[in-house]
Image (cartoon, rainbow, N blue to C red; front, side):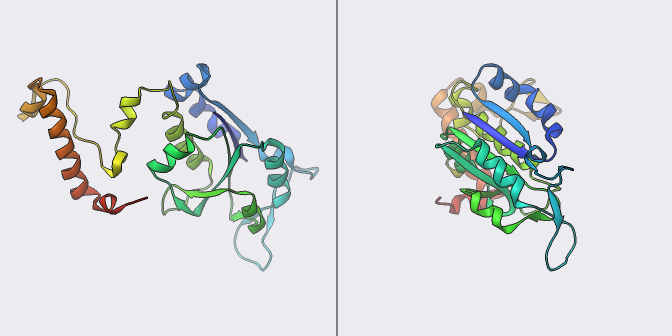
Length: 223
């Protein structure tokens, strides 16, 4: 998979690309992630990419020209273009699985007050990672890229992500490690039994119980 991220702050991604699973996935050529400065596509001699909004109001608005030119430069026949905005649909695990099947993703990271409205016609999909406001789309692009990359073949074992929270709209089951008794809190006996069928049954029951208690809304989803 190839991922191109369009941003005004490319150095925000330095640590993200050089640590942990993302770094290994890049080294092992499971994913190719490239960060591009939107200012490189500005036709202004000062590399200006924003201006005041028509009609007044607070903040600066990203101009369409640099972003249109950047998208058109990187877009391929199989590209899916994603606009990161608080007005997008809320991102969830099933979308991560769907996006992990794509060949090429282009993320557009907003900043300042927002985008010129005409930029929206570039996007195949508008996504938000939650009902709150960030300073820009850089962190959401990292969140979504991370969630997709770990699903790619050969990045982590398939069993690991099949048992994740949100698989089948359920939260993950409780997990324990040594010691078996810590300050009077004991590991459930079933996990020490070695009886795999019973352990599997217990884990499923715990997933349902935990989801009903903490995120009952997940049980109502049918997307």
